[in-house]
Structures are given as structure tokens and as C-alpha cells.
Length: 214
Image 1 (cartoon, helix red, strand yellow):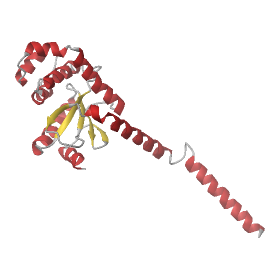
Image 2 (cartoon, rainbow, N blue to C red; image 1 turned 135 degrees about the vertical axis):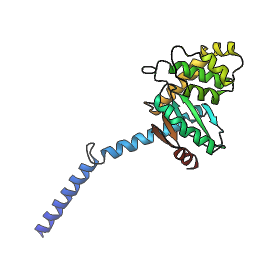
Image 3 (spheres, helix red, strand yellow; image 1 turned 180 degrees about the vertical axis):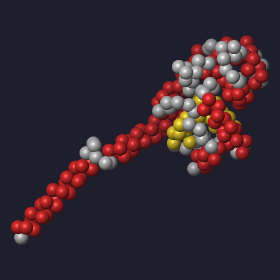
Image 4 (cartoon, rainbow, N blue to C red; image 1 turned 60 degrees about the vertical axis):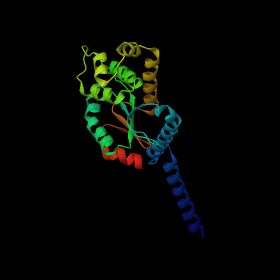
């Protein structure tokens, strides 16, 4: 009888030790709990900022529901490498679209900010897709004339365009995009939001359409 009680006590002590270990901050489930908490926080932030994200520039045709999003930098070689898949996604799915938000990495790409401002103004003038393509395919330098690219993209009033690139509203829109990226945990470009997932680096056209359909 006594031996049975001892065995029961020992088993309870072992079980308690196991539970304590699993529940402790350094236990084997610690990483899982951390990831789960971070995921929940990301989803909350994403839901909070969806209205602002939806104000991004548009490539293709936007439909109801959430669209794929890309945070981009026009001087980023990885962003440029991703353009082929983005264009394929749009061409093969003419009823779909993608939102573009600007996240220039000025510390390593000195002309990316100017390109982003030019893109924002081209968007305001109704010529974003053409300007986006030109900025992604032109070798940017201190000799790049944003006005010439804007004219090639179809912007008619170049005096207005030049004023737009230095306007407070344009700076504010760029800052809004950057603040959104920072809030969502964007650390580099390109970074995509596909469905409710944040994905850094390149993606395929299939991943983009799967995100829309999912």
C-alpha cells in the first residue's frame, strides 16, 4: 500500500516536472509560442492597415477582396528581377491586379527615393503602369531625368509633374508607404503580401494567383 502511494507520488512529481518544463519560457514550446504571438500581432497590424494598403498604386485591374501587394525599390536588383513574374501574373490574369507600395532603401540605393516620387506623381497623373515599367528597366543615375521618363510614360503636363515631385503631398504619400512597411515588418525589397502572408524576396506568378484565389 505504502509502495503504491510512493509510486503515485513519484509519477505525479515527474508529470509536474514535465509540465513545468514544457510551460517554461525556455521550454521546447517557447519558439512555437513566440512565433504564434508574432503571427497574431502581424495579422492584427495587417487588418488595421488594410485601408491604407488599398490606396497603393495599381498594376492591372483590382477586384473586390484583398490583392497581392509588393513593397518595392526601383533601384533594387531583386525587385527588377521580380518584374517578369509580376508582369506574367498580370498578363495571364487580366482581371487581376497588384498593389505597389514604395519602400526605397536610400542608404544603398541613392536614386530610389527620386524614382519613387516620380512614380507617385505619374500615378497621380494616371500613368503609373508605364512609368513603373520605365523605372524598372532604366539604369538610374544622377543623370536620370525624371521629366523625360514621365513624358515617355504619357504624362502631358511636365511643369505640373516637376512641381509634384517636390510637393508636400507627394513626400507624405511616400512616407505613408514607408511607415506601412515598417509597421508590417518589411526589412528589404521586394517584400510581398500574398493573402495574409508576408514574403520577402521573389515570387512566381503562380504564387500570386494562388494568393488571390486562396
